[in-house]
Image 1 (cartoon, rainbow, N blue to C red):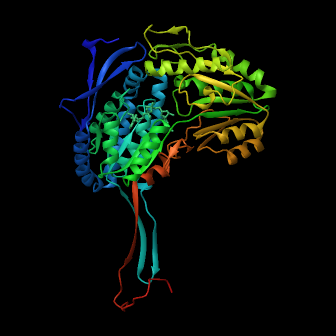
Image 2: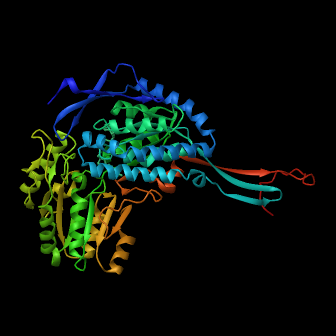
Image 3: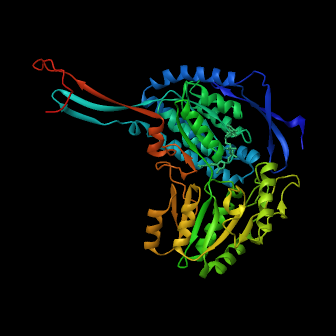
Length: 502
Ligand code: NAD
């Protein structure tokens, strides 16, 4: 549905000012809870992106030369502003993404934690220093900013994912261009306005909205030194390949199919609670969602019964109300998810709970799918092989630990993997042998804290660096090692030999 009178223009924020030009192309933005168009976002041309990169490059020079103390103060001010505006930003997220306001508040809070980590930038940028590595020679290392860096984010965490990167990149002295998802672009604008209020100089943060044309422009512009991308695996691979071919530093986080292995000695109530919150939180539109439960045969019936009992209590509806789960982000995504449910049913999996019919506590035109539970899922079925990115949980029955672990390790993705057990030895073997970047032991969604790094293995991440934590600091800096001599007057002499310590 379209209501032209209430459609808001959403545009680029360049050098702290909203762009006043006229866009040749725009994309519609919808409220998924009502199915109504609420906005039209400008899609940047290559020329506009190149112009923004040039302005950011100028700003980067002054910002890199700004003392760390002053940079840190901007971070602290931004932290306070973000905290004060959490509710407003969460409501913006809900209006375009659909997730419940409580869930949106959670994502802003996790983003805030990265800001708090970045507030310690003077400590994080300390290099090493060694005195007298040779006679009258000292050696030390510097961590310097890269210049202009790009952040390209997905729809599912419109605030948190950009904040995995932006605070650290800025704190380290870079200028940033963010390209948010065109499906829910407004939260990033609201957050960028807070950076202005916090005293960040113009041009150090810029928001460019767009699609493939804007992404390609960032990937091809030689002034953009590094790109942090988060999205689906095919696009992550593309961004990595094109960006590295152009000589850039790239971290490209992709899709996931996260498994939760439940051993017979696990606390089944704890496991069932975890499976439900991990699978259906944010309607399953999380890269760390639990989408497969591997249930060991001897407890599978009991576990499925406990999961089903909990799923039946969930309410799906408008995220601004009291629902546990909001709508799906777009009509196309909703239809794709429904297609997977049909395929799983047709392939012979047991459809324990069918979320297609509702009831839904929301507008009839909203993009709703209720929580769906499949049991006896085969590993050849598309509901097992594909990332569904919706509220669909598949239970695969396995003989025991070894079969569960080999299924996880055979999977093309390796974002998060989880085990539920009371056997410390089994948990230890799991954490050592599982091929995944983030591991949970009796924890369903093991998202690392800001001071650790977030990232998967295999097709869940292309590049060498994970997000935030020390890996994030390294990603946004280049190291330089200085070997310095201040000779005392007695130390003279010519030597063509290779410098060495004798
Ligand atoms: P997406 O790949 O469709 O889009 C991500 C970004 O890429 C957006 O900014 C989009 O505008 C841009 N883009 C889309 N098509 C493009 C193209 N052809 N060329 C260049 N750029 C393009 O992903 P999405 O649907 O927004 O997000 C969901 C996906 O993101 C899921 O697969 C999910 O697992 C993944 N994700 C991964 C993580 C992680 O940490 N690994 C975190 C969040 C989301």
